[in-house]
Image (cartoon, rainbow, N blue to C red; front, side, top):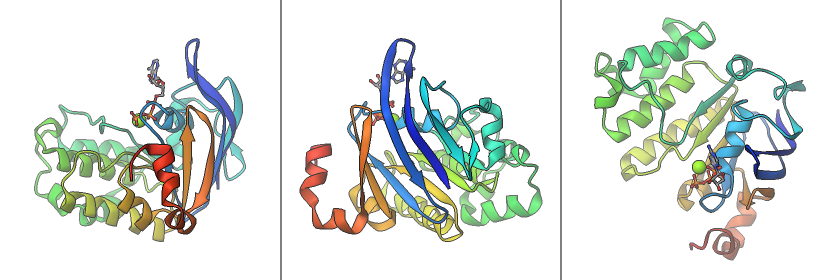
Length: 232
Ligand SMILES: Nc1ncnc2c1ncn2[C@@H]1O[C@H](COP(=O)(O)OP(=O)(O)OP(=O)(O)O)[C@@H](O)[C@H]1O
Ligand SMILES: [Mg+2]
């Protein structure tokens, strides 16, 4: 289980998170909802060790993560698909996947599995990442993360700006990972996606500790979503 306990962090003197806690179990999808600037990306970056904590702790299966250097977090089985994809743009599809495989020393079998999830990437292995379409780039970002065979997957707006068929594919792969027992934290604005794949929803507001509700409760209280997001 991934556990974030009462973390405070920010950028320099600017504090962004004020005592945020959450937990995610294997096979569970926790969806983070909140307005622009609420601190969702900052929370994921903190889990990945990309920002030092001012206080609080983060652990995975009882082992502290926040005391580890950033480059070792992935070795604990945590994978991150950053907002805006952050691929190695001048490298090919194959090379981007290779980098993912190397993190945990995965090989041919893992590569095959990942390419089965995203057959379009197989046809473009020699193409440079920067020349892929937006949807293909998102597939590659997911593929690279899944090449580590993670036990925790952090997805920051993976369907942002994608057309419906691409959204459906990303959602389908996310659900597959959930069903294989991966613990998932998903930042997502599309309500239908949230209602389809999330088990619980955490509403983060101004970096304050999020209120968490089950998705079935959320479906019964749609004005909650209005209240937090200003959308229906
Ligand atoms: N590198 C940085 N330096 C300084 N401030 C930052 C930095 N990155 C983010 N912030 C600030 O931290 C706050 C939270 O940003 P964050 O990216 O976590 O929000 P978010 O919830 O992911 O928003 P969005 O929905 O727009 O992606 C914002 O006020 C933002 O301006
Ligand atoms: Mg963000």
